[in-house]
Amino acid sequence: MSTNIKSPAKEKNKLGSLVKSFHNYYAPFIISIVLLIISVVFTILTPNTVRSLTNEISPVGKEAVDGNFVINMGNVTYYALLLVTYIAIAFVSGFISGFVLNTIIQKFSKDLRRQISCKINKMPLDYFDTTQTGDILSVITNDVDILSTSLQNSVSMLVQSGAMLAGVFIAMFIACWQMAIVVVCSLPIMLIIIAATFKYALPLFDKNQQLLGEVNATVEENYSGQLVIKAFNAEAKKIEEFREKNDLFGTILYKSQAIGTLIEPAM
Image (cartoon, rainbow, N blue to C red; front, side):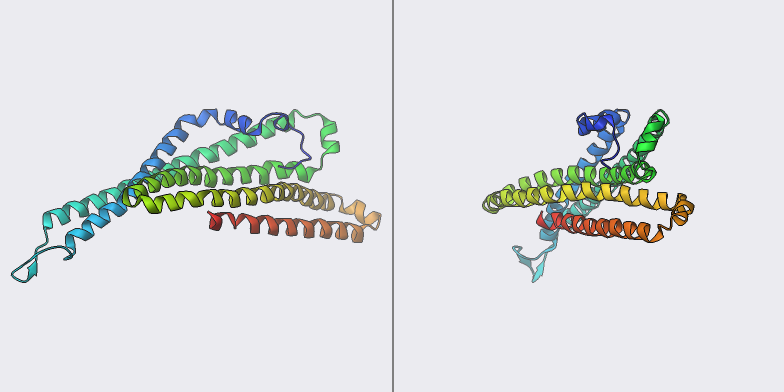
């Protein structure tokens, strides 16, 4: 969030404050996570069922009777129904989980905006004299939207990736423990790359939000004070000031987005 906004969250643990603000949604959040894990589990079970179904209809390893390979249709039907059941459970669980998670996050964002509005209404007048209006608007709109989007994407991805990673490792050790060990040995390299990427990217994202607030503040002040700007013949100065901030914001935004896109390929 913008560094110009002074709030109690800066003096406390931000993550702890966020978790406390989320306390009204613990129950549906846990339900959503459980459903997401169920979806991942059945997604992991699907390939093994496909393998069993393929083995049943494949002539490899079967003896021919009168020149024809006998296919046990009972087993084929069983594995086909089992496969459809797994896919259906995974889809329904994932859909309900996503619906519940998105709903509670949007309600949480609404609560945050309401809390910010109540907080601003109680602020002293000198706060508005020393803080740019565009910066305040940036916190209410952009920062809350980014937090909402991050929660929607990051929470589900974190849980899904963690459950998928654990399930895949178990399946790999069952199928071929030698290859599983090779993958485990490569994990430290991946973690080092991700940690280095985050270390470089996080300051860029912080700077990006700060500059976004400054650009919004500049635009708002220039529009609301255009008569004063014209009276003092400061159009050229204000245009140059906006261009400098906008160019810097564009550069930082490009760098942060470029670094952010490297995280998933690294994983």
